Image (cartoon, rainbow, N blue to C red; front, top):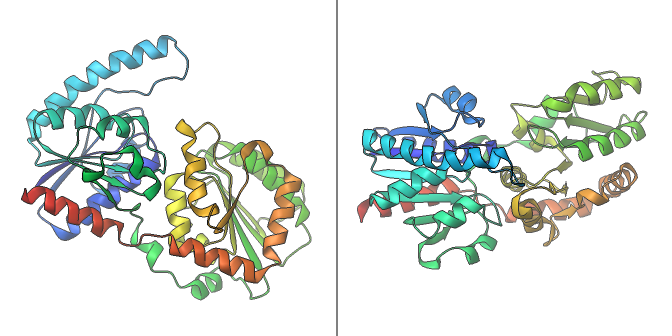
Length: 367
């Protein structure tokens, strides 16, 4: 079986593609998998690290306002369609999978026209434009939240969940806390705003960190994102806090699963994969959706957790240092409430997303 996976743009599209690829290779070691991306996304740096070949098509995203960039993006559509035709003719795939983002559009469109088996995976509770368009043409639509079902043809849509790496399902909380030298009396807060960082969260977090200067029973792990790391690190150092004390500031972490598994509370944006990882771990959360996300999809994602009571939603425009301090301290002081929030969050997790997707792939290939 030869499979093309279009996964590009952001990590939110790329990592589900990698998880699907891993599942296919586990179940079918002889499968040949080739990723398709663009040179303007993160995939050119990420995919090769996992050992998969990657080829590129010429596409780019649209700006919100008309400009010369818009004209370039329109030209990119035609370039992308031509590149997609060449790639499909070259590889003659049995299956083409798209995980959203503008990279998937041309490839899945051409594949569906050529009667090649197709599947898309939608990570968000409110679908992106590319998947909304492709949903009318592809053979199978995997959704991650039941809230997305209304936007796709029911007979071809199935609830899969967001596939997360196996590490998120193999967690020993006691061992992780021991590894971080956390005592039973210490409460650990993980703050993360995504790979690029979240300015509003980072600034409000500084107020929280300042309020905990002399509280060694409060441990903070702050993942700032690469763009704001130096600024936030300098501000924390200005507080006179030692980097080896009870506040840890890093640009990012390759072991977020370890930090989430040890955390008593997480403060985060609500990208689809962040939500899936928080659910898998069953961690109480304060979620601050990115307000400029297309279709406001991060708020839809957040509400999957917060509406049932698994977390607290704070809109970006309402976030202040004072509000964050109040909310965090209220939750850290209430062990029973956090336990209930964690249980609700855990129950929302779909732990066998990879199995569900592969089962549908098998059915698709048998038809």
